[in-house]
Image (cartoon, rainbow, N blue to C red; front, side, top):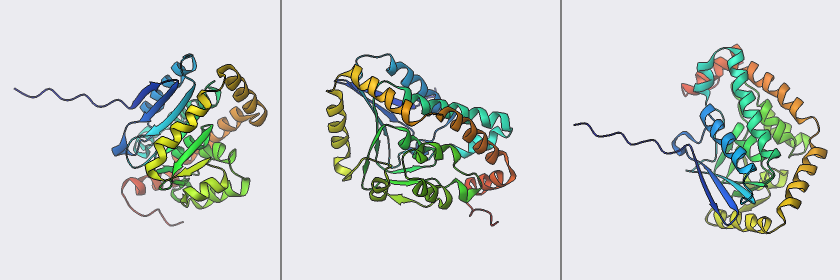
Length: 263
C-alpha cells in the first residue's frame, strides 16, 4: 500500500497578531520566486487585508536565506509568446500597485538577497527593514532583459543616478548602501531583524488607522502621479525583452548555469 503524498506547504503564510499581519513568502528552496501562483496568492491576500479592519500594519517577509529572486525564468521561457509574457507582467504590476493602494502600511522584512522583481517588491513596500546580510540587485541587463518594471519602483525610491547605476550595471549592493541610497529605512543585525521590524510595526499600529490610511493614500497620489502609465510602458518593455532573441538566449544561459552570452 503506497503512502499518501504529503500536501505541499502553502505558497504564502499569513499570521495576524494584535493588528500586525505577517505575510511570508514560503518557497525558500526556489528563492521565493514570483511565479504566477505566488503573484496570485499575494494579490488575494492583499485584497483580503484591505477590507480587514483588524489589520493595522502588514509585514512582508520571506522564508529561507533569500528574500526573493524575482520572476521564474523557466516559467517565462515556457510562455514563449509575447502576449502571454505581457499578461504575466501585467499581473505582477497589478499586485505591486495593490501594495501602494492598500490602506495599511506595508513593511518589507528583508533577510537576504532581493533580486530583480524581488528588489522591486522591497522598493514597492512603504517601508523596509533589512538585515546586515541583505543584498539588492537588478541584474536583468546582464542577461538581455532590462529590469524595466523593477525600475519603476526603484526609480521612485532612489535618486535617479543611483537607480540607473543599479539598472545599468546589475551589480549587487549591500544593505548599508541600500540604506544610504534610500531603498531601505533601517539596517539591523540579522539576529535583531524580526524584533526590530516588529517594533516598527507596533509603533505604526498604535496610530489612528483612518488617519494612517488617508495619509498614505494622499502621499502616493501626489508623489506617484502617472504610475499606472509608467507600469504599462515598463511591462511592455520587459515582456518584449524576454521575447526577444537576446532575452531568450540569456534565459537559456541562466537556466543552464552558463555565463551570459557575449555581445
